[in-house]
Amino acid sequence: MAIWIDVSTSRHELKMFDDDRLIKTYPIAVGKMLSPTPTGTYRIINKHYNPGGPYGVLWMGLSRPHYGIHGTNDPSSIGKDVSHGCIRMFNADVLELSSKAPVGTQVAIHK
Image 1 (tube, rainbow, N blue to C red):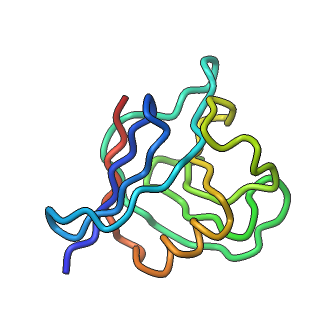
Image 2 (image 1 turned 45 degrees about the vertical axis):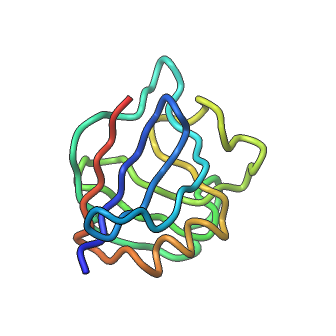
């Protein structure tokens, strides 16, 4: 099993794959114009549960310093360009994703 993640910032979608098989699509929020989500290929390097504040129930740090995939304390932001560059998810979705995507999972981010 080779889980990997594809993020489309223009579609506000995060897709989880097992090799070439789509497992699930999640709605996300991404960076705003002045602090866009960086494109490229990264890896999940750590996970922190209950980080508090705007990060919701979980933070998954990416190999690009200061960026991650995390929950939110503002669910109304999902589907919008509002973050400082991170990828926001509904809290239940980020927990589900984290349970299937271990540290080391590849994350490809594109427009």
